Length: 380
Ligand SMILES: *Cc1c(COP(=O)(O)O)cnc(C)c1O
Image (cartoon, rainbow, N blue to C red; front, side):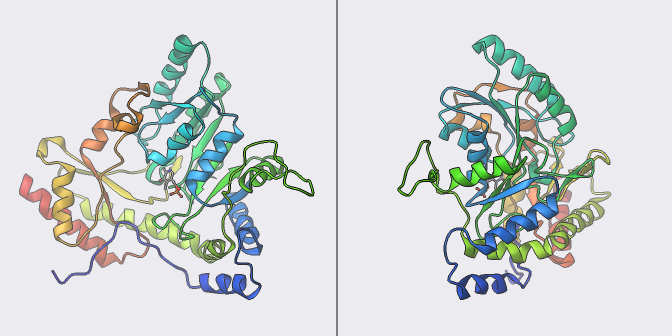
């Protein structure tokens, strides 16, 4: 095999990251917090609009603190999208609360507003209480049906936390993802649209909430000359060195998002006329995904599994990945109630994530599409 390996989503540096890291070293700001963290937060606020942002050590930490801020505690129930990465739901367990999973709808692959309302009504019947929060995900960058979901959430007075870890740069009705819930979580892990090598942020509605999040994420030290604590604290702030990578990455974010969308467009073009494959796309003009990952669905009748195609691509030195295995199919969440009609489970059974990183060349994308097409043709 002499062709170079094509990865799913590889870090793509802009060139200015080292400048910001050197700034940190020059001033010995090699600590959590510092000027790079402040600058990175302001860049994110300018980009997202109408919000305050607190940079944290991971997207998972952002979801955790979002739940803390919403008052989620021992014994509470939290409604979570079932079709997602486990980090959307694990923080519910950190709080001693119970996840209740809600299925997706076929248009966005995100939380079904209908299943959400059914879940809320039924949980009230079973427990006599409404769930404490709703965690909605913008999966693969595709915005969830926020208008419908928010309407249901408001009807029952339940706050929404938007897990936009995969959706930085995506827009719904011309507004940026991450800003739709009471809180929004972002991730800058190595495989996301931009990276800080590892990091995240919590998008907050106002200054007061942001100050509280900063307080909780730096060990909840009260303003006293000695260490004095009234509530549980966390060590969740982003390092000033990592934030420097983020400052450089923010300078190229619009280009990175544009390139992911271009790659998605190229796949659509290349799969035109190939029978049995559908490229997941924006369901209407309200939706403008960043296409963090381009995903395909293939016809069940073709009689192969995602693993068959994944192995075939791997033999061509191409990395691909199964769609997220729904949380209601995970042993760790075996006890959690589930509401839905099996939509996510069906998607999981006949889809695949294709290489989508902004660092890919057009030739790389053509190579992937040709390999998929060759495989499909042997099945028809
Ligand atoms: C990546 C991801 C997270 C977690 O973010 P980390 O920064 O890796 O902790 C949470 N939710 C979703 C949907 C993700 O894709």
